Structures are given as C-alpha cells and as structure tokens.
Length: 206
Image (cartoon, rainbow, N blue to C red):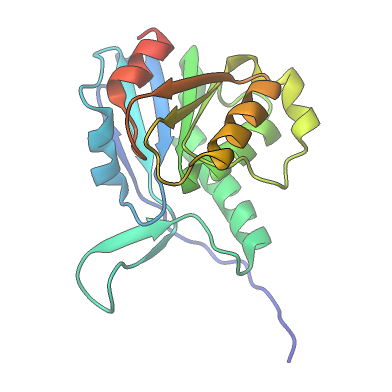
C-alpha cells in the first residue's frame, strides 16, 4: 500500500462582525478545537465600533458526540499534517485577498488554543499580511524555528488564564518563559481557557 495525494478545490466559510467599509482595525480570529466560528465570535463581545471581526472556520468539521448533534471544527490532526498546514495557509491567504485586508493599517491575527498554531505559522511565514499577532492559551508550533521569531515578535502578545486547565504548574511556567524569551508581551489574566474580550481590547489599546 502506498499513500498518494490529490489537490482539490474546497470551500471555507467565515463570518464577519462589524462594518468592513468604515472600520479602522481588522481582527481575524482563529477558533480552538471543536468550536464553530459563529459561536466563537461571542467571546469578543462587546466589539469596539472601530473594529471589524473576521472569523474563519476550520476546514474539518465533525460531530462532537457520536454521529449526530452538535458540530465542531478543527484545523488539523496528526494525520497528513503537512498537507493540512499548506491548506490552512492557502485558506487564510485567500481570506486576506477576498476581504481586502491590506487596506487596514492595523491587521491583527488572533489564534486561540488549537487555532494559535495555525495563526503563528501564517504570521511568521508571511511577510506583511498582518501587523500584529495574538496567541491565546496555545502551544507554539514546533515546526517554526524559535530563533526566527526574534526579528518578528515586536508586535506579538501571548495571553494565558490563571485557571487554564491546559496549562498547570510547570507547563504554565515553561510557556510563560518560552514566550517571554521569544520577545512576546506576556499577559496573565484571571480566568480559564477562553478569550477574555475586556483583556484583549484593553491590551490592544482599542
């Protein structure tokens, strides 16, 4: 048995909150594992009037329990991960072009949990599509050379909740140390594994 691949056209959906024509800042936010984009967007409320929020959804949707009921989405798994990484990159690139993000002076890419790895890969492998990166409660992808981030992390932030169950004790300390050493602004807030809109907008000065 041999493994082969085929490249196909695929539809990706995204949601937009706010006035694209009159907004001053665009925020593209990538959800975590098992979430759907339209529900993930609720974590950013209330959204400042100058912001337009763009919420792409992972290309892999599945039933969260059994074969019916609630649906979630993910960005990738360990299977065929190199293809998924390329597909995710092309997906976000197409999104940047369709929404015409380059017309905004501030273009912020947010990656929460599993979406953080996809966001980091795109930000550090694309020259100027986004001006700022926010990683939230996520592990930095091991396939990016950490030394590369030094010249690119000036506008990067890492958020982590004090009660995040995925980052406890030594794991949390390692994450805090890693991101700080890479030049990220590290922000701890009181809370769990979820985006805190108050902390986000305050830290971004919006």
